[in-house]
Image 1 (cartoon, rainbow, N blue to C red):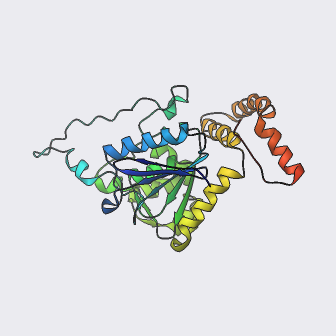
Image 2 (image 1 turned 45 degrees about the vertical axis):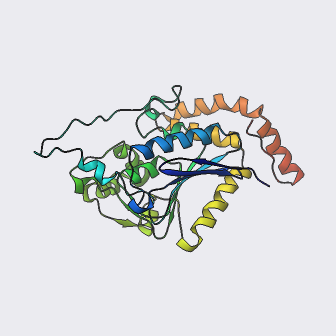
Image 3 (image 1 turned 180 degrees about the vertical axis):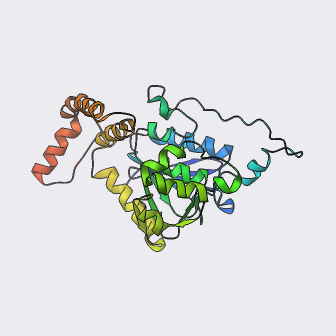
Amino acid sequence: MADTTVRTYEDILYSAEDGVAWVTLNRPDKLNAWRGEMDRDVRLAMREAANDESVRVIVLTGAGKGFCAGADMGMLQTIQTGDGATTRVAVGSPPAWDPASNPNFQKQYSWFPAVPKPIVAAINGPAAGLGMILSLYCDIRIASDSAKFTTAFARRGLVAEHGISWLLPRLVGFSAAADLLYSARVITAAEALQMRLVNRVIPAADFSSEIAAYARMLAHEVSPRSLREMKREIWNAQFQTLGDAIESANADMPPSFRSEDFREGVAHFVEKRPAKFTGR
């Protein structure tokens, strides 16, 4: 029977089983609106998953009907004083997730790419504002057909926050990104799929089981070492020329040929049996 790990946090639920860590935003009465406690808990849970050798993939999702409704409105209301003068709001960065990672991955929310395991956003419901940004920093986005998306910022008098001006055009193109940011209109999961904001859309009735099956596939049928190295390569490549990316991959190839996972990758194919990757 697979080992199961359960930890207690304030604003999230965390469990790890069968190679998959589940990080569930857990303020369902607020559509999982983001606040400082949730920020802290998600970082701690991601660190726990990263340090757990039995975990090979991480799923980020929301409890109840929402993925994440963005920043908690009560928190936003405290930003402005009663006389209309804005208070001083610190927009800084916590300690770097990995000080050796690309400096671009050491900002307040851009640390997801520095987590050395793939993160799948299982978008079970509305993803708005900061909630949408968090999904964009995940490696893969899979949405329920009941999910909805909005950048929200223009309707709050805000700006394109936390790197979404860089992320969104790379996913959907400049014009579509401008539309979503300027209008802050709500789009359905079907439209999100059409514009390649998400990878797949799954009927709500099948969502949990399909997400679990996909996560288990990543955990057991492919090399954890390959996942780790490929994640680093594709995120770093966003800041490289083609030539730089080729040189980086060429430098990564000899260690991969010496790895246990390469030997197992060849052996299980030749022997026509399920793989037993170790991640080494």
